[in-house]
Amino acid sequence: KPELKHRGITCFIVDRDMPGVSIGPPEDKLGIRASSTCPVILDGVRVPKTAIMGEQGKGYKYAMEILNEGRIGIAAQMLGLAEGAVETTLPYLMERKAFGQRLWDFQALQHQVAEVTTRIEAARLMIYNAVRLKQNGQSFIKEAAMAKYFATDVAAQASSRSVEWLGGVGYTKAFPAEKFYRDCKIGAIYEGTNNIQLNTIAKFVE
Image (cartoon, rainbow, N blue to C red; front, top):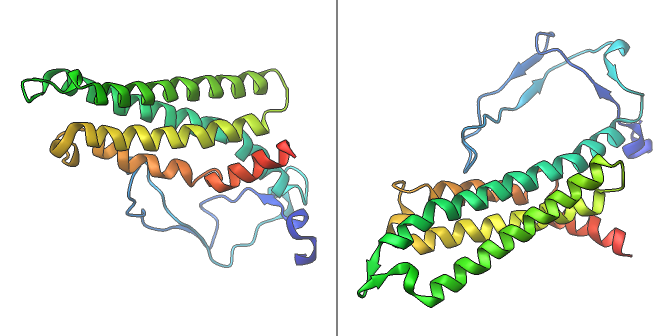
């Protein structure tokens, strides 16, 4: 019933062996290539009432509950990515020399690393706070949105900076920085784009 809009959505469990169900080829993605992303094709599939998951008409509610929880997971994923980008780049900065000194000895570079590591720690604390609220049965929707929004931004900054800190080799596959750079972009897209997170946060601020 289209007139019911989101209140007319119902969840079904569909077995992949049912007639009309098929899995398309993997997408050729920019990043997170180790994770297969394939289209699920439903062609004339008929499902019985016994396949309804939960209550009829509650599908949208279930989906949003999963998304709200999932945003904490995506924030944690982006935190790990940001940490990985910095940790795998720092040894090069300590060893590589230019103009008679280590790259690390340039104060401008130290300031950039200090800023990124500070933002990484801030993202960690925001994620821990969202987890704490969730585990204690308290409202966590705003905090989850904030954590995801901030952590994905930190991941983008950390991975981009890492490529720059490495210089020319950062643009090659000799170092993992380019992979972190590609992988981070999905964080601002799935489980609700960053603009959606801002919408959610604003609703709680009002």
